[in-house]
Length: 427
Ligand SMILES: *[C@@H]1O[C@H](CO)[C@@H](O)[C@H](O)[C@H]1NC(C)=O
Ligand SMILES: *[C@@H]1O[C@H](CO)[C@@H](O)[C@H](O)[C@H]1NC(C)=O
Ligand SMILES: *[C@@H]1O[C@H](CO)[C@@H](O)[C@H](O)[C@H]1NC(C)=O
Ligand SMILES: *[C@@H]1O[C@H](CO)[C@@H](O)[C@H](O)[C@H]1NC(C)=O
Image (tube, rainbow, N blue to C red):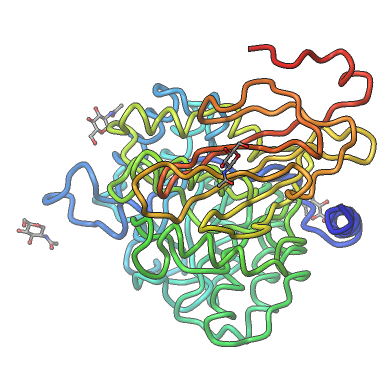
């Protein structure tokens, strides 16, 4: 595990030397965000239950608690674009749209806090937001102060309508204004996304130093495999960007965008695949769905405690796709507990196959790069193929993966002593 050791050493270096030190996002942020499902819906006459409004945010807040998401860690309630009035006031201050946010932002923030949750908001680094509302440029200090006054806990800063060549200075500058308010706010940056789009060189070390999380690739769309931003497209993109893996760690994360589970585009099996790969990627788990109407099977996936625990693993090491064979994509993430020099692992087998029968796939533990001589205890996190079974590096893992589905395993490293005590199977 030479590579993985390198990652850890580098992470430690980043953390001590020059990482954003606001004490936040020590594990990937979890919560709910309006954009993917609700977009810039502003006509509340036409769409009373879907427009970006105080009602929508209160509804999501209530449901995070009543449907059991909050106690599992989904705690940030984040309003994306389209909450503002179309212009600033005479003093340059932002205000929410008065028809859709009648009680004002501070009251809404208080409401979210009263339920034990955290409140997030959206701005844009440019002159205008992506949907055309007033952006940060020229107003960084006043906006940072306004957000602090509203007791905001999380700020997503998009990058439409701006010059990405100025972002290496501009994003850290806004971060300093946030810091100066004295209120800890998670800082989510779209800085590398806009630089990538316009072929500006990206300084990831600087981004990890100034942001708690950052978007690099397309907005997620409500689809398994159609077009840019589909779940498959995003998985493939990150599989091919192994250069960014090393920048993830406690306090600073790659953000492949929201979970679309609960919406229209994914089957149950595809939903498991998104959840598994997002866990391997140490990605933020931001729901963007109508929490009142999530089908029970899908809610079960979103609330899978063992999968959430992998996503939230305290070591914070991002995993990678190690290979694709027979259209089975193998994703591997080192996790705790560590036994001596050996990590435990989460392993996701994601199928891109389309032949009806669940595909039988065999791989030895060693072929996954897992070398602990004492072995591992294997559990299947969504299914029942393994339940507390002992394997050695030479053992053959055998799984059956549904077309466009996943088998997601946890392999917990054991010591020699544990290994001797362990029976063949506890099930
Ligand atoms: C909202 O939708 C209604 C019903 O279709 C329409 O009459 C109204 O003009 C729309 N309002 C705006 C501001 O577009
Ligand atoms: C939230 O909105 C849905 C409609 O999308 C509604 O069915 C549900 O009752 C609302 N729940 C709360 C707690 O407001
Ligand atoms: C501001 O930055 C300093 C130095 O990194 C850090 O110690 C402090 O916690 C930060 N405060 C906030 C509110 O982010
Ligand atoms: C997987 O292993 C089983 C049992 O050893 C064997 O029957 C099967 O043919 C193997 N499948 C493949 C695709 O190699």
